[in-house]
Length: 99
Image 1 (tube, helix red, strand yellow):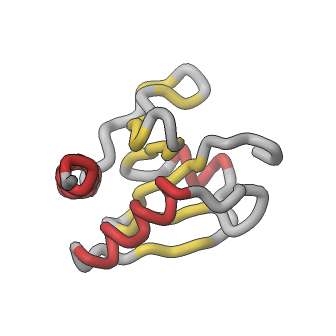
Image 2 (cartoon, helix red, strand yellow):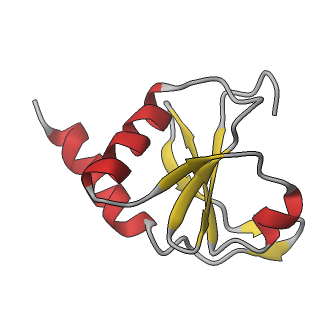
């Protein structure tokens, strides 16, 4: 992930987790953290190993040009949509629509 401008988030047990290292801080990532805080959703920055991603309730990435994008496959296996993503996406799009 080093030198990548994609930020990965994993949802496990109704908590948004983000890698603690190897990810550049980003505007969209910061906005997602702020939205989660506003919605009362817990967040956690920690090392996310591939096994944790496979066992997560869902995965999404953030990137300035793309916004918030759910990951649909991991290692060729389908990934369920993150359960927390709908309220976060709704709040994100509402924020973007503000003048």
